[in-house]
Image (cartoon, rainbow, N blue to C red; front, side, top):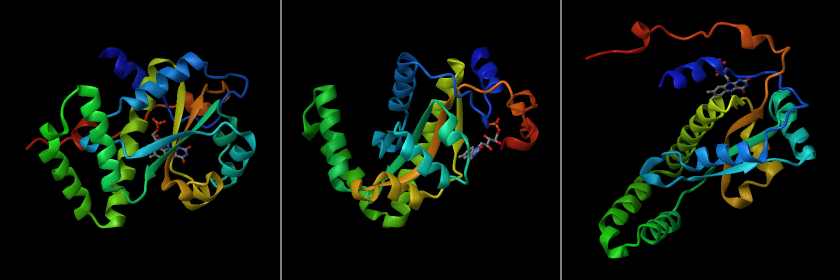
Length: 210
Ligand SMILES: Cc1cc2nc3c(=O)[nH]c(=O)nc-3n(C[C@H](O)[C@H](O)[C@H](O)COP(=O)(O)O)c2cc1C
């Protein structure tokens, strides 16, 4: 566990990436697996994770991201996109996966499946979209922590215009919405932020014991 805390202190939201350093395919595969294994509400993983490799797309996205340089300078750019209007069909897909993976009959989980469908059907569309978007933050957190263990830098980013992202990446047509961005790579030695002390609430301020 001491490593976890050390890594959490090592990582920081990188502003300037070293454009000469690329994350290897092997490390990228590990990071993707960390994302894939993320917990989610009911296990539904109501999102897609998009790796944007096309430089032209990345340049367009930069102008939809407050001009932030990480979008084009980082080794990799990931967009977490929540599924909009998550439906019974998505729940069916999850339960098909569950019953196949665990080699059980659908009847064994029918009651639970109905419960999940009922839950999503009671949510107004806007609330449901907030709920699916929230799940992407858990995946982002897994990415941050896994990357830190590999001494790879990740900047979580909310500083972008989701509607422009949706247009540029054609996400509306896919029933997706850009929820969160992460830039992945290696810090530039000139990024002064890496030397600054972490600013966090004290334990006393953050925790409440009742
Ligand atoms: C959801 C989220 C969105 C963020 N958006 C941006 C962003 O758009 N650009 C940026 O440079 N940093 C962004 N940050 C980084 C935070 O500013 C940073 O995590 C925070 O100041 C704590 O510092 P540290 O991560 O370096 O320890 C974001 C962080 C989170 C968790």
